[in-house]
Image (cartoon, rainbow, N blue to C red; front, side, top):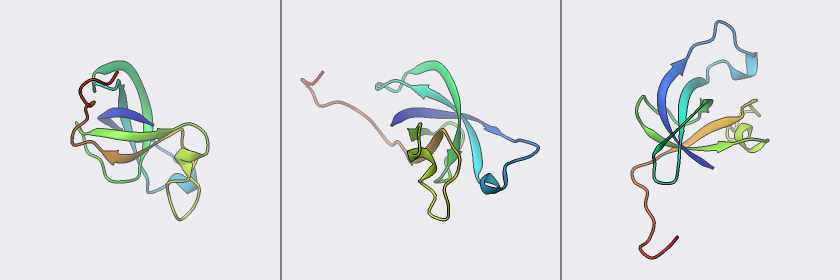
Length: 93
């Protein structure tokens, strides 16, 4: 899984039918301290994330497409959570 920040929306002129009705969001990947990495990806939104929100994504392989109960959606990244806060316990690396 990866952290990200929603920085925009993707509006294609045509979508493969199984993806229709799913929001596609432009997400900047973040490191474990929620700092920007400069890497961007398009993620299918499973939960209704909004612009500027910090999110958790499942990426790569079949896992990203299995999030949707009605059918497998072809997706390299899917937003599965909104981050309220993140941090490490003191003394951990």
